[in-house]
Amino acid sequence: MVESTCISCKFFRMKDAVGGVCRAEKNLRQPEGEKPAVEIGFTCDEWQDCGQQYYIRQGWIKSQNREADKD
Image (cartoon, rainbow, N blue to C red; front, top):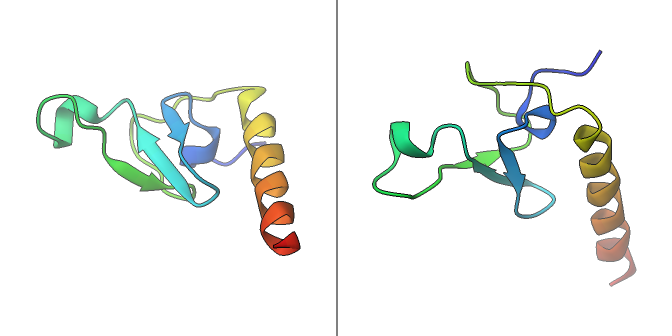
């Protein structure tokens, strides 16, 4: 079973291999239109399973880490 963290949430949008923004809470915590920055491991009450997108995100993170190791 997938953990209930941001990386597996349908409202999460990745920005880099460390975190991204939460689209579910943009109107709750931030001024007009701003989306709150969150880390991959964060969790909240708005979490909803993103299904296959979780595995796509994990693959993207692994790819980014490999590229960083090459540099």
